[in-house]
Amino acid sequence: MKLTRLLQIAMKSLEKTEKAVNIKAPWGNLTAITWGDPLHPPVLLCPGRMEPSTAFRPLVLRLPNSFFYVALDLPGNGSSDTLPLGVRFSVQDLVPSVLTVVEYYEWKKFIYIGHSLGAAIGKYFNLAYPGLVTKMVELDPIPAYNMDAAMPIGDWYHYYYGNYYNEDSYKKHNAGVETAPKYTLEKIKELVQNVQGLTDEALKHQLERMIEPAGDGLYRFTYDQRMKHVTLLPFPSEFLKKIYTAPSTPTFAILAEDMIKLGIYDDVPFLRDPSAWPNKNFKYKTVPGGHDVHLNDPGCMADDISKFLLENKSKL
Image 1: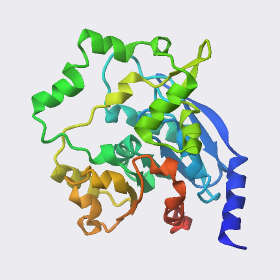
Image 2: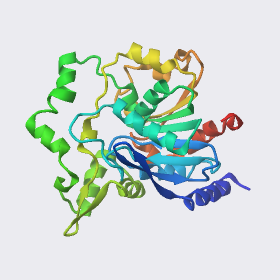
Image 3: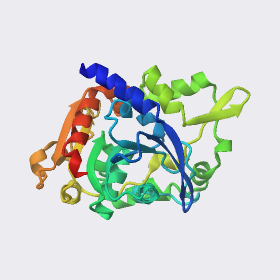
Image 4: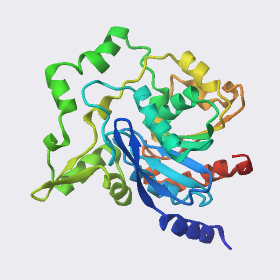
C-alpha cells in the first residue's frame, strides 16, 4: 500500500478520535484536545503565546496514529482559565501547566512537542523534572533561545516589569475579556493574517479557540493580554548553551527559514551546531516558511517528526 494511502488512513483514524478535555489545576481549569488511544505512548504538545491547542491539529493529523496526543491550551489561552490576574508572569510560571497535565494522566514518560513559547516551557520543565521527557521536538523555538543579555538590566526590568505596573498598562493587561475590543469576523481575520500570514485553512484552526462572539455579529479575542510579553530571563548565549546541552534528552528542532534570514538565531550558534551538544542528542532541520510554518505547512516537517517519534519506540 502506498505511503500516501497509509497517511490518509492514519489521518482519518486520528481525526475520528479527537476529544476535548478539562483538567483541574490549582488556579482553575486547563483545557486540551486529545487524539488517539490513551493506552498508546503519550505526546504532549504545548503551543506558543496567544496560540490555541487547535493550531496543532493540522500537524497531529499527519503524525503516526500509534501515539496518544494531548495538545494543551496554556492558561488564559484557548479555553483555559487564566492564571490569577495582577502580577506579570514569566516562562517559569507556565511550567506547572505541563506538570498538571502529566500528573492528571499519571504519565511516567512522555514525548514533548513545543512551538515557540511552548519550546521554552519544555526546556525548563525538562531541567526541573529530568527523566520524564523521553524526546523533545522544538518547532521554531525562538523564545527558548531569545536573549536579552545585551540589554542593560535596568532596561530589561522596565520593559518587563516597571512599565507593566504603571496605571494604564496594568489596567489594560488585567481587564476581563468583556472589555476587549470588538471586531467583525473579517476584520479579525485580517488582523491575524497581517501578523501570521496564515493560509485560509490554517486560519480556521487558529481562530477556533482564539475568539468568541461579542454580540451584534461582532467578535473579540479571548487570550490573556499578559501573554503579549511573557517575561524572558536575560541569559547570555554561553549560559543557554551550558544548561540546554547538558540533558541527554534526544532533541529535534525545526527552524523556519524566514526567521533565520532575520537573524533571530545568530547569537546562539550552538543551535545549528550538533557537534556543540556533548551528548550527541541534537539534530535540526531548516524548512521554508515563517514562524507558524507548523500550522501553515505541516507537510514540510511531518515525515521528519514522525521518523523521530518512531525511533526506538519500544524503549518509550
